[in-house]
Length: 163
Image 1 (tube, rainbow, N blue to C red):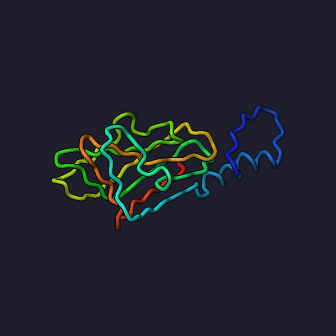
Image 2: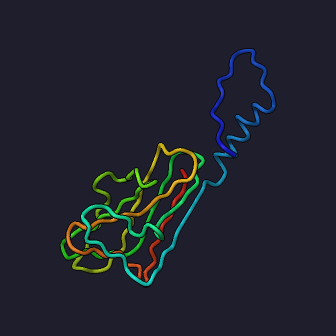
Image 3: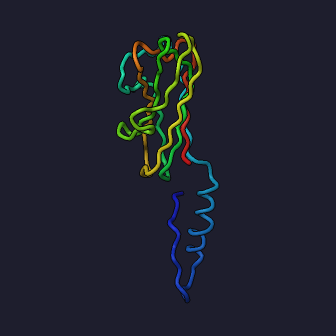
């Protein structure tokens, strides 16, 4: 059931049961009902590696989250294990519908410590989306050198929810 924009009532207007049901009952049910939620857990046989200094999809076929929104806002989160060259950073960001970036041009920086594996998280918030189906892709880039997003025996988890 979709959200119904609140009506503006005028003095003397006769309010029918359907009006009250739409404005009060249905809108409350919409607000209190569960929001669309999606998740992907990817654990493959090979790690994802990039030397790109521009954002690229981690895996456009498998590391993609699809949500059917009733409203206009979504929160997306990715967690996993990464490794960047010594003294370098690896950057993560989200892109919605292959057009709208959550973090702007920089994304979220994750520093590596002496080429060691370490956990990362990347959070993206989107507003102003239209109701309907949206795809959210995790993207990454390296500051310099080959950066690795571990997927070989290490789960990469994506989670999204309408808020």
